[in-house]
Length: 283
Length: 177
Image (cartoon, rainbow over the protein chains, first blue to last red):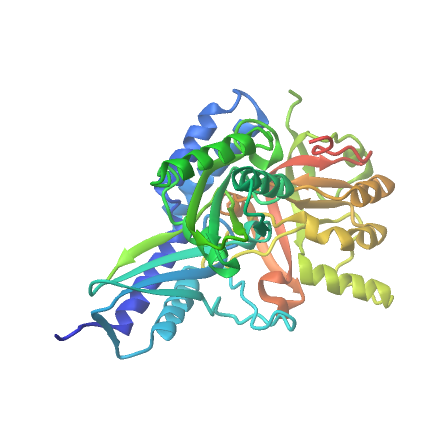
């Protein structure tokens, strides 16, 4: 059976389009959550005025095709490649990096990537991207890009919990993560939570969890209940937009889980600011 | 609710002394961007008693690394997390810095240094880079060009909407939160 050919240049074009969209058009579920949060703020309060500024900011960014935030982030790219697809005329990582580089040039996005963690030389291209690849059934290529700013990334955390008392352990860890972030990472926050797996796979799940619509719960009822419990307890911290107090501390909690070892339970929180940016497409 | 105050840079002592934590202001005039690497360099220069590329006396630093301008005055230019600049702040205040703009909380040490110098720390709306870019009238690199977005930019701003985070008496909007 012949495999379906996917040109590297088409992958590059798709990645470019998705990066520009993610950075300039606020995700619709996020926008809806922000509008809802704004409605809940006390009339005449500073917090409400600041929420209105953020909503106006999103309108300006979309209208003028400029970045929602100056921190257009380091890009994580999730690829699901169909086993019956084959990439021709180029390599996958090069096509992805080309797409990111072009998006950040043409979109006038900030180049925020350094080539070495100690030397700190700006690569000038906002590449390399961080790429995660899964092989799936079919002959299509699914691409998701998450340009993640580091204000929120810097407040993300991981812990290796004890295998007993997991529910309370997870709730406490997530709430503590939000408490430690305080006003610094631009609330109201969205929490991507990884649960189970191994140390590195758990962290990956936490980032992947941010791709899910914040209106969608985890399909497993007992995990969905945990998502709600974390959101409620974190909002009780009363941090609010810009740390000015009020009801808007956490807009959403998405948990992605995986089997894990009898001796432990990794948990990871990939914290997102209110401007959770991602875009997906299929080739 | 007290009225929104209009203030201009360079900041004068009386204007700064009148500000209270939680006050809303509209700031106009010249501000200088500087973030992690620029702060590190400035403090190294102060240690070596070298003259700084910008005279900080009475000036305001904005913790910001802007996106490229394209054909606009400036790209998205919201504040970055102020806490990372905490270790570098006391020497700059000693060198005459009067105001800082950023987002998030500062350490008790910085609040104390602000009180000691009669300076002020403002909060800009975090994540409002596009909105804030519309209030910048002029933008030019004045130092550390090799740092790209982390260079020191001289900005002329008009009615930058800010909230007083820490006032000249060291009162902190985030105290007790």
